[in-house]
Structure formats: C-alpha cells, structure tokens
Image (cartoon, rainbow over all chains, first blue to last red):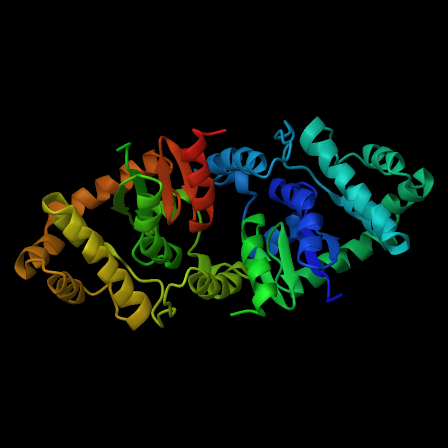
Length: 200
Length: 200
C-alpha cells in the first residue's frame, strides 16, 4: 500500500470532526491508510496571525451556519457546543500517549472525543473527562491520566505542533498526500483526483 | 424562473475568476439566472479585520498553490499575475455603469477583465486598460472612461459594497440563493443540493 494520508486536525475544530467521520472510509476507497495527527490550533493561529473562525466578523456568523449545513451534507450528527472553541491540550496529549503503543486504540479514542464534544456537548478540555473517554474505548485510565500531566508528553505535543507548522500546516482539517497539501473536507474530491491521476 | 443566484466577487480574486468561468453553466443547469455583483475586497477585509490571503503566513503559500490546482481542476486557464492583488475600483465602476443599461454586456465585460488579468497578466487596475477591455466587448469607450472618473459612480460602488457587507458578504466568490449563503466555488455542489431539495 502506498504512503498514508497525513490527517492534521484539532479536536475543537468542527471541520476536523467532520473530517474524522469521513476520512477512513474515503482513504480505504482510494487505497490509502491514514496517519491521524492532532495538533493545537492555538499556537498555529498565533504563528499564522489569525483568530478563531467564529470570532471573525461576518465570516464567523457564516461559519456557524456552514458547520451545521456541512455536517448534514455529510450525514454527520452535529451540534455546536455551548462552550466553543475549547482547549484541546489534554485530549491531544492522551492521543499521542495512546498512539505510540496502539494506533488503532488512539484512533478510536479520537473519534470518541470528537463525538463526545460535537454530539453530546461534553467539555473535552477537562482532563478528567478525557481520561473517562479514553477508558470508554479500552485505554488504561491511570496511564492516560499520568500522560496528560507528564511534562515529557507536553513537550512531545509541542514538537508535533512545531513539526506540523514546519510542514506548512495552518488549519484543520488539513491533509497531506504524496507531499501535496489539501485544506478542508471540501478538497477531498481533488485529493482523490490527485491520487488517481498522479497530479496535474 | 426562480430568483437569480447573487454572485459576489472581486475582479482581483482568483477564486472569483474561477467562479466567473463556471457560474453561468452551473446556474443554467439548475434553472437559475445569475446576478453578477462585483465588490471591493479592500473595504470588506477592513470590516472583517482580515488581510489579503497571500499575505497570511503558511496559508498564503498554500493559497498560491491552491489557486493553480483549483483552476486546473475546473479546466480554467490560470496564471497568477506578477502584480497581485490589484485595486479593482476602475473595473467595478465600469461594470455598474454598463450593467444598468445592458446586463449581458456587463457580464461579457466582467469575463473579459478576469481573463485579461488571469490569462494575460494585464494590469486591470489601470483605468485606461479597463476602458480598452470594455471597448473590446462592444462598450462605448467615452461613456466608460467618464463613468470611471464620475464621483456618482464611485458613490454607487461604495453603496453596492456597503449593501453587500450588510448582507454578510465577507469574501469572493460568495453566492446567495433563496437567502442562503455559500462561500467558495467548492460550495457549489452544496448549493445545487440545497436548491434541489429545498434545504436541510
């Protein structure tokens, strides 16, 4: 099988959530694996010099409408949480702690986190909540709790974010396949055509 | 025929250009007319608090790549002009001067301006150039030259931009159909589904 699709996302990103619900079936259909790579949009937006989408005049109002419309278009259940956006450091640390030992478990955890936030409105910024969500998909509760508080894991996440920025990652979801970058779920048809034709 | 699709764009917007090349055939297919509505992204971006896309770190680099890739995907000839972006006051004034008397002529003019800029790299910020492009599609040279310099037409354009902002327009291209807003050529499939189903 050819190289995986790198799938960059932030756990607080609505479009990242929609991406998380569609990317595996999409990738399987075009014969690729997916490397899930959560990042933190906070430091990325700081680097880029932009604000959270919903804070931007006019564009923010549109975005709130587009989140809902887009989710329904892709048949993904979605409710914008009252507390939005939220910090995703705990979830991201837990993810990398899990993914080193068991990528499939980490992926199940990621989907669980996204669904908890976007279908049940659960506050995923809370470390204790993140531990519960990890336990639900079969992860070791103590190990995840320790990882969230571990300075080495914090550093690991920082390095992942820095590496993503170095690759040009500026938003969520962002896909890289065969060195080519595609931003947004709406670019998946072009990504598919790119892989099918070898680019243009 | 049902109400037209409002098509907002700036003559300096690459995605607006791609939109201009595909919107008429698209709208005809779904049984709608198109009301072409050039605006000025300068005052709009000031209102929104954003910068021209290519000036944004990382995102700007991606955008330059995406312009080209997107144009090829839609089979639209495209070369990013050396001087980019440019002011589009003259072209926008000329457009509204023409559209009041002859909307079809104004639309031909708009396509001519976009193609001059994005296929031949012609500087469309220059009023004399705009007059030449208008003459090429059959407009009265003197009338267009006078309109570009006319404070009343300048005011008219300002009012069009203010009205667009009041409707929530924040980018280019932006389509409004039956009161529903869709930003970007990449949202046309959803716009089509929206019209076909009556919304969701």
